[in-house]
Length: 395
Image (cartoon, rainbow, N blue to C red; front, side, top):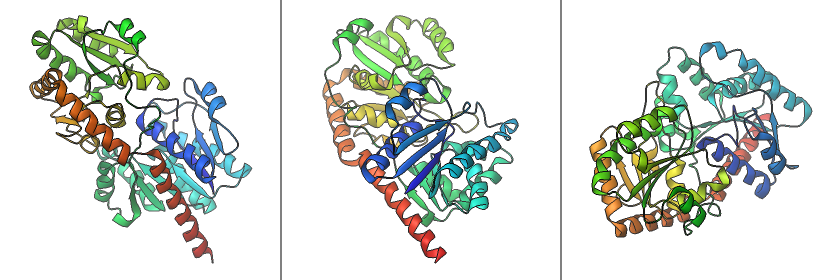
């Protein structure tokens, strides 16, 4: 089939949903022979990525920049997305439109369906639905996208439940959770060069790999670290990622007197992320819901860390409760309770056997339940079924 994905951003832009699309669509082209065209925006590093990744059956078309907000003054950009998609439709055959964002791609797909008759499939991650609930008119746009889609693909149970709450029939929703690249993320000895660079020899290392954004919970971990450190002076906290919160978080480490035990690594290239998981003893991200409805909808970093054989600590919020098996692959905590977080961190810091047991259980689970090939097969089957249904209707 000829598939066109509309996404406001795409890799190398950081973000779990973008990695989700890349891994699935790459396999749809490689393993099933679908011709895939990604219509998206320019992000830092896009030229090198596209030169390396694009080929005859996997093409990326980029124009302009991603949206900065979902505010109403951005509405005219629906026309830009429609024009870009229409250009692809005019230049090559497209059997099925797929949308990776509710806005503007989802709205554009509704109008393209009305104009061309092309069916569309929409992905749901949950955060977009939660955020729309807290706005006055956006639920109207949400319902229009959901109602007109042939199929909805929920990337986690949280998104599936949100779609059901919005009135979507259960039969229309298909759950396709993220996977893990087991070649990139696997247990390996810590890289000696990185151990030297960050002074980690003899340390118990905590790691958070995420954008520095309020919903990721870096502040809670830093505050919990201040409670843990006096009894565990050999602990070091690595923060891999960057963002608007960095300056405030750095100041917080100085205020709490833990700056010597925290390293802000900055952005880590995707190809280096596996090495950072293997640097740590415990992966921790106290994800939480913040004002505006923004939250962690699954937390791919938790299963990536498990794939490296590491135990994880996550916030009891959003889709993380699906990614982390409490008491088996890691622990879930109240992200607003730094005492509970500190106690959980201290438990894993002090108990190497527990770390190994949980890390091994997480690795076993990932290898049996979270392969990207199985996710691509699910989407392939959905695409084929939509095509068959459309042909039956046409006859």
